[in-house]
Image 1 (cartoon, one colour):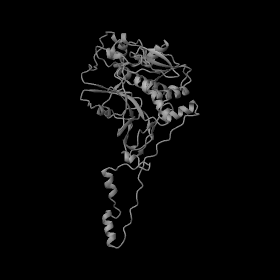
Image 2 (cartoon, one colour):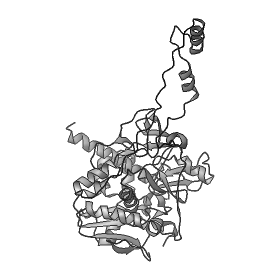
Image 3 (cartoon, helix red, strand yellow):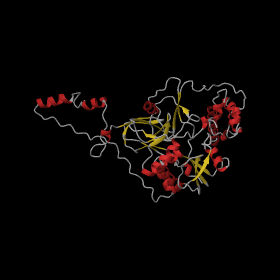
Image 4 (cartoon, rainbow, N blue to C red):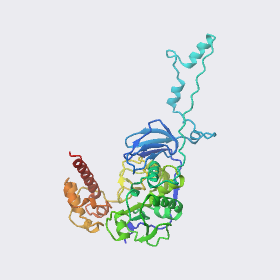
Length: 440
């Protein structure tokens, strides 16, 4: 067993609640913003919706001011505690910037005459200067009240959860078996044992809602061999915790002995915990679990990656690589100002020179990628076709079966960017299929 691919490192990795984040950049991910720049929001305020009934909406993680709205993200700056909540229980106005203060002080009601000059003129004429009307301080909207799920049928419950930020696509299809993936998705992720061991009540609350949403007659909790954990209402099934068994199709095969059946649903533990947070509170999902730089965090959605580096006293240098996601399937990001989304469960950091760089070198035909592929494809041929834009040939090689585990690129002695080739080919084939459906 290769220790680099073991999914259960052992030992507890406690989860830190990341408080004090003063600014978030919430990725929109094809959502449509419903707030504008300079708007005030409170925790749980709806900020973006999605046209699909299966994709959860987005909400503000704290009281603050919308500083920026772009096609890619919404940036929110937190209000100071004394501004966000007054002693009387109402949110107070945000602190003004120096420019806004100057603008408020400069009144030009009479041909550029300033307020002090106007008051002096009125006094000289024996008149009383008119009192300036007091402005009502702007306050954030109230936080939403908790939603009760009592008495809701599956359709009503799904709609309520979508509006609270939970994706419900996996629950809206028939299933004879519902598998809860209790393994860490990739090497370097550490939150599965923490959630199962010390946040079981939240997982149980999520499972109770999952059972109401899905028509599956049987629920199974997939666990690493030797795990002492369990969840009431789900049968334990133990698997050898070696990547890529944690990915959906290898896990289905490990649990059922069958490949790619259409009537089995797999839900990650990360998603079950998010469902449990909403189940317990009745409030919108505004926090996410992530393993960042080897530590587990419960952080506001949109927390910049830089916040995790700052907390651990690290700083990426030129040539280092920062990944959003796991080391095997994650994507490199251009800068640490990027905020985490609800589904981003890892931030990885690779020092320059720790791994050989990917190169567009020719395939040497060694067959190592064919030998390691868990779904028995020919990654060598797929990568060649994708490299030269022969995407229909990729289809003939069954590229749709590829689970993008990254093992072929990891083992390739030529350091070819295999996974990147496959994703590019899938993207182009999707566009071509769409054009065909539209008759273009």
